[in-house]
Length: 297
Image (cartoon, rainbow, N blue to C red; front, side, top):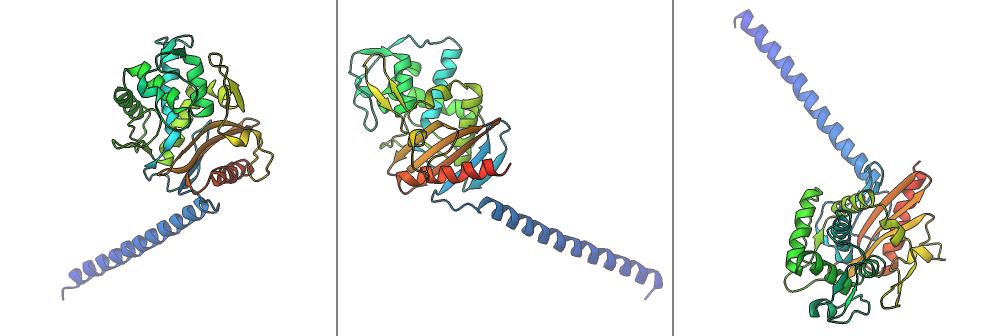
Protein backbone atom coordinates (compact mmCIF):
# COMPACT_ATOMS: atom_id res chain seq x y z
CA UNK A 1 0.00 0.00 0.00
CA UNK A 2 1.19 3.52 -0.77
CA UNK A 3 2.88 4.96 2.30
CA UNK A 4 1.01 8.27 1.97
CA UNK A 5 -2.35 6.56 1.86
CA UNK A 6 -1.40 4.48 4.93
CA UNK A 7 -0.54 7.62 6.89
CA UNK A 8 -3.88 9.20 5.96
CA UNK A 9 -5.79 6.08 7.08
CA UNK A 10 -3.91 5.97 10.39
CA UNK A 11 -4.65 9.65 10.98
CA UNK A 12 -8.36 9.13 10.40
CA UNK A 13 -8.30 6.10 12.70
CA UNK A 14 -6.75 8.12 15.54
CA UNK A 15 -9.21 10.98 15.06
CA UNK A 16 -12.13 8.56 14.91
CA UNK A 17 -11.05 6.82 18.09
CA UNK A 18 -10.68 10.13 19.91
CA UNK A 19 -14.09 11.32 18.73
CA UNK A 20 -15.75 8.06 19.72
CA UNK A 21 -14.01 8.08 23.12
CA UNK A 22 -15.10 11.67 23.77
CA UNK A 23 -18.69 10.86 22.75
CA UNK A 24 -18.80 7.93 25.20
CA UNK A 25 -17.39 10.15 27.95
CA UNK A 26 -19.94 12.87 27.17
CA UNK A 27 -22.84 10.42 27.41
CA UNK A 28 -21.46 9.05 30.66
CA UNK A 29 -21.19 12.57 32.07
CA UNK A 30 -24.77 13.33 30.94
CA UNK A 31 -26.08 10.18 32.58
CA UNK A 32 -24.22 11.03 35.79
CA UNK A 33 -25.62 14.57 35.69
CA UNK A 34 -29.15 13.24 35.22
CA UNK A 35 -28.66 10.90 38.17
CA UNK A 36 -27.50 13.82 40.32
CA UNK A 37 -30.51 15.89 39.31
CA UNK A 38 -32.83 12.98 40.03
CA UNK A 39 -31.22 12.51 43.44
CA UNK A 40 -31.51 16.22 44.22
CA UNK A 41 -35.17 16.27 43.17
CA UNK A 42 -36.22 13.16 45.09
CA UNK A 43 -34.48 13.34 48.44
CA UNK A 44 -37.76 14.51 49.99
CA UNK A 45 -40.28 11.70 50.34
CA UNK A 46 -43.68 13.05 49.32
CA UNK A 47 -47.12 11.49 49.18
CA UNK A 48 -48.11 13.87 46.36
CA UNK A 49 -48.08 12.58 42.79
CA UNK A 50 -46.68 15.93 41.59
CA UNK A 51 -44.95 18.82 43.30
CA UNK A 52 -42.73 21.84 42.83
CA UNK A 53 -40.92 24.32 45.09
CA UNK A 54 -39.71 27.70 43.90
CA UNK A 55 -38.34 30.99 45.15
CA UNK A 56 -41.05 33.65 44.97
CA UNK A 57 -38.59 36.48 44.33
CA UNK A 58 -36.31 34.93 41.72
CA UNK A 59 -38.51 32.19 40.26
CA UNK A 60 -35.70 29.66 40.81
CA UNK A 61 -37.01 26.09 40.92
CA UNK A 62 -35.70 24.25 43.98
CA UNK A 63 -37.51 20.92 43.72
CA UNK A 64 -39.68 19.03 41.22
CA UNK A 65 -41.66 15.80 41.12
CA UNK A 66 -43.61 15.02 37.95
CA UNK A 67 -43.84 18.79 37.55
CA UNK A 68 -44.71 18.77 33.86
CA UNK A 69 -47.46 16.16 33.90
CA UNK A 70 -51.02 17.39 33.40
CA UNK A 71 -53.39 16.61 36.29
CA UNK A 72 -56.83 17.77 37.46
CA UNK A 73 -56.16 20.84 39.57
CA UNK A 74 -59.45 21.36 41.46
CA UNK A 75 -59.85 24.67 43.31
CA UNK A 76 -56.22 25.71 42.91
CA UNK A 77 -57.41 26.86 39.48
CA UNK A 78 -59.30 29.62 41.32
CA UNK A 79 -55.95 31.42 41.41
CA UNK A 80 -56.56 32.18 37.73
CA UNK A 81 -60.04 33.49 38.59
CA UNK A 82 -58.40 35.66 41.25
CA UNK A 83 -55.78 36.88 38.79
CA UNK A 84 -58.36 37.96 36.21
CA UNK A 85 -60.47 39.67 38.88
CA UNK A 86 -57.54 41.54 40.43
CA UNK A 87 -56.40 42.59 36.97
CA UNK A 88 -59.90 43.94 36.19
CA UNK A 89 -59.92 45.93 39.46
CA UNK A 90 -56.43 47.29 38.81
CA UNK A 91 -57.44 48.40 35.32
CA UNK A 92 -60.61 49.97 36.77
CA UNK A 93 -62.90 47.80 34.66
CA UNK A 94 -64.67 46.90 37.89
CA UNK A 95 -64.62 48.01 41.54
CA UNK A 96 -64.82 46.27 44.92
CA UNK A 97 -68.09 48.07 45.66
CA UNK A 98 -69.83 46.75 42.51
CA UNK A 99 -72.95 44.74 43.34
CA UNK A 100 -72.86 41.34 41.63
CA UNK A 101 -76.17 39.60 40.80
CA UNK A 102 -76.38 35.89 41.54
CA UNK A 103 -77.67 33.74 38.69
CA UNK A 104 -79.36 30.38 39.10
CA UNK A 105 -76.19 28.78 37.74
CA UNK A 106 -74.10 30.41 40.47
CA UNK A 107 -76.63 29.85 43.25
CA UNK A 108 -76.87 26.11 42.57
CA UNK A 109 -73.14 25.43 42.23
CA UNK A 110 -72.10 22.53 44.45
CA UNK A 111 -69.17 22.00 46.79
CA UNK A 112 -67.70 24.67 49.07
CA UNK A 113 -70.06 27.65 49.16
CA UNK A 114 -71.37 30.64 51.07
CA UNK A 115 -74.94 31.88 51.52
CA UNK A 116 -75.77 33.47 48.17
CA UNK A 117 -79.42 33.77 47.09
CA UNK A 118 -80.45 33.63 43.44
CA UNK A 119 -81.62 37.03 42.20
CA UNK A 120 -79.92 39.00 44.97
CA UNK A 121 -76.75 41.08 44.51
CA UNK A 122 -73.65 41.09 46.70
CA UNK A 123 -70.53 43.29 46.91
CA UNK A 124 -67.70 42.08 44.69
CA UNK A 125 -65.33 42.32 47.64
CA UNK A 126 -67.40 39.80 49.61
CA UNK A 127 -67.43 37.35 46.71
CA UNK A 128 -63.67 37.69 46.28
CA UNK A 129 -62.96 37.08 49.96
CA UNK A 130 -65.37 34.12 50.06
CA UNK A 131 -63.52 32.60 47.11
CA UNK A 132 -59.96 33.35 48.26
CA UNK A 133 -60.46 32.35 51.91
CA UNK A 134 -63.27 29.80 51.88
CA UNK A 135 -62.86 28.53 48.30
CA UNK A 136 -66.56 29.25 47.68
CA UNK A 137 -67.55 27.83 44.30
CA UNK A 138 -70.77 29.83 43.99
CA UNK A 139 -68.83 33.05 44.56
CA UNK A 140 -66.27 32.06 41.89
CA UNK A 141 -69.00 31.31 39.34
CA UNK A 142 -70.69 34.65 40.04
CA UNK A 143 -67.38 36.48 39.56
CA UNK A 144 -66.68 34.70 36.27
CA UNK A 145 -70.15 35.45 34.95
CA UNK A 146 -69.83 39.09 35.98
CA UNK A 147 -66.47 39.54 34.27
CA UNK A 148 -67.22 37.64 31.05
CA UNK A 149 -70.98 37.09 30.80
CA UNK A 150 -70.99 33.30 31.08
CA UNK A 151 -68.99 30.35 32.39
CA UNK A 152 -67.78 29.38 28.91
CA UNK A 153 -66.78 32.94 28.01
CA UNK A 154 -64.85 33.25 31.27
CA UNK A 155 -63.08 29.95 30.58
CA UNK A 156 -61.94 31.43 27.27
CA UNK A 157 -60.49 34.40 29.15
CA UNK A 158 -58.72 32.02 31.53
CA UNK A 159 -57.14 30.12 28.66
CA UNK A 160 -56.04 33.31 26.90
CA UNK A 161 -54.44 34.57 30.12
CA UNK A 162 -52.73 31.20 30.55
CA UNK A 163 -51.02 31.68 27.19
CA UNK A 164 -50.04 35.22 28.15
CA UNK A 165 -48.54 34.00 31.43
CA UNK A 166 -46.64 31.25 29.58
CA UNK A 167 -48.52 28.39 31.24
CA UNK A 168 -47.70 25.63 28.78
CA UNK A 169 -49.72 22.72 30.19
CA UNK A 170 -53.01 24.23 31.35
CA UNK A 171 -56.57 24.05 30.16
CA UNK A 172 -59.57 25.67 31.83
CA UNK A 173 -63.29 25.01 31.42
CA UNK A 174 -64.71 26.92 34.40
CA UNK A 175 -63.95 29.35 37.23
CA UNK A 176 -64.05 26.78 40.04
CA UNK A 177 -62.08 23.65 39.15
CA UNK A 178 -65.09 21.37 39.65
CA UNK A 179 -65.46 18.50 37.20
CA UNK A 180 -68.48 18.22 34.92
CA UNK A 181 -69.49 16.15 31.90
CA UNK A 182 -68.03 18.91 29.72
CA UNK A 183 -64.61 18.56 31.39
CA UNK A 184 -62.48 19.89 34.22
CA UNK A 185 -59.54 22.23 34.71
CA UNK A 186 -56.12 20.61 34.34
CA UNK A 187 -52.65 22.00 35.01
CA UNK A 188 -49.12 20.81 35.64
CA UNK A 189 -47.48 21.50 38.99
CA UNK A 190 -45.02 23.77 37.18
CA UNK A 191 -47.86 25.83 35.70
CA UNK A 192 -49.55 26.09 39.10
CA UNK A 193 -46.25 27.35 40.53
CA UNK A 194 -45.85 29.90 37.75
CA UNK A 195 -49.43 31.08 38.22
CA UNK A 196 -48.90 31.50 41.97
CA UNK A 197 -45.62 33.32 41.29
CA UNK A 198 -47.31 35.77 38.91
CA UNK A 199 -50.36 36.20 41.15
CA UNK A 200 -48.26 37.10 44.19
CA UNK A 201 -45.80 39.32 42.36
CA UNK A 202 -48.37 41.15 40.23
CA UNK A 203 -50.92 41.48 43.05
CA UNK A 204 -49.04 41.15 46.37
CA UNK A 205 -52.04 42.37 48.37
CA UNK A 206 -53.62 38.94 47.94
CA UNK A 207 -51.49 37.72 50.85
CA UNK A 208 -53.32 40.12 53.14
CA UNK A 209 -56.52 38.17 52.38
CA UNK A 210 -55.16 34.62 52.26
CA UNK A 211 -53.35 35.06 55.58
CA UNK A 212 -56.65 35.53 57.45
CA UNK A 213 -57.76 32.38 59.34
CA UNK A 214 -61.33 33.74 59.42
CA UNK A 215 -63.15 36.47 57.56
CA UNK A 216 -66.61 37.96 58.05
CA UNK A 217 -68.60 38.94 54.97
CA UNK A 218 -70.13 42.40 55.26
CA UNK A 219 -73.27 41.51 53.29
CA UNK A 220 -74.34 38.19 54.81
CA UNK A 221 -72.58 38.56 58.19
CA UNK A 222 -71.31 35.04 57.57
CA UNK A 223 -68.00 33.98 59.08
CA UNK A 224 -65.88 32.10 56.55
CA UNK A 225 -63.08 29.83 57.74
CA UNK A 226 -59.88 29.58 55.72
CA UNK A 227 -59.44 26.18 54.09
CA UNK A 228 -55.68 26.47 54.76
CA UNK A 229 -55.52 24.83 58.19
CA UNK A 230 -51.77 25.51 58.41
CA UNK A 231 -52.58 29.12 59.34
CA UNK A 232 -53.88 28.12 62.76
CA UNK A 233 -52.34 24.69 63.30
CA UNK A 234 -51.03 23.63 66.70
CA UNK A 235 -49.93 20.27 65.28
CA UNK A 236 -46.16 20.28 64.74
CA UNK A 237 -46.52 17.98 61.72
CA UNK A 238 -48.21 20.74 59.71
CA UNK A 239 -47.20 23.98 61.42
CA UNK A 240 -44.80 26.15 59.41
CA UNK A 241 -43.45 29.49 60.62
CA UNK A 242 -44.24 32.30 58.20
CA UNK A 243 -47.00 30.60 56.20
CA UNK A 244 -49.63 33.02 54.91
CA UNK A 245 -51.30 31.45 51.84
CA UNK A 246 -52.28 30.45 49.25
CA UNK A 247 -54.94 28.05 47.84
CA UNK A 248 -56.32 24.58 48.57
CA UNK A 249 -58.10 22.24 46.19
CA UNK A 250 -59.93 18.92 46.21
CA UNK A 251 -62.03 16.77 43.90
CA UNK A 252 -62.19 12.99 43.62
CA UNK A 253 -60.14 13.14 40.41
CA UNK A 254 -57.60 15.69 41.62
CA UNK A 255 -57.10 14.32 45.11
CA UNK A 256 -56.00 16.74 47.82
CA UNK A 257 -53.96 19.69 46.52
CA UNK A 258 -52.38 22.78 48.02
CA UNK A 259 -50.37 25.76 46.86
CA UNK A 260 -48.59 27.12 49.92
CA UNK A 261 -46.40 30.14 50.48
CA UNK A 262 -44.35 31.28 53.45
CA UNK A 263 -41.89 34.07 54.17
CA UNK A 264 -38.98 34.20 56.59
CA UNK A 265 -36.91 37.34 56.55
CA UNK A 266 -36.37 38.36 52.94
CA UNK A 267 -36.95 34.87 51.57
CA UNK A 268 -40.37 33.77 50.31
CA UNK A 269 -41.09 30.32 48.90
CA UNK A 270 -43.97 28.84 46.92
CA UNK A 271 -44.79 25.14 47.13
CA UNK A 272 -47.27 23.12 45.11
CA UNK A 273 -48.44 19.61 45.96
CA UNK A 274 -50.99 17.77 43.82
CA UNK A 275 -52.91 14.55 44.33
CA UNK A 276 -52.26 13.45 47.90
CA UNK A 277 -54.49 10.67 49.22
CA UNK A 278 -55.81 12.52 52.26
CA UNK A 279 -56.21 16.06 53.52
CA UNK A 280 -53.44 15.90 56.11
CA UNK A 281 -50.85 14.71 53.57
CA UNK A 282 -51.18 17.82 51.41
CA UNK A 283 -50.13 19.90 54.42
CA UNK A 284 -47.40 17.58 55.71
CA UNK A 285 -45.94 17.45 52.19
CA UNK A 286 -46.07 21.26 52.07
CA UNK A 287 -44.20 21.45 55.38
CA UNK A 288 -41.49 19.09 54.06
CA UNK A 289 -40.96 21.21 50.96
CA UNK A 290 -40.97 24.58 52.70
CA UNK A 291 -38.67 23.48 55.52
CA UNK A 292 -36.27 21.99 52.98
CA UNK A 293 -36.26 25.28 51.07
CA UNK A 294 -35.62 27.42 54.12
CA UNK A 295 -33.01 25.03 55.53
CA UNK A 296 -31.02 25.17 52.28
CA UNK A 297 -29.82 28.72 53.01
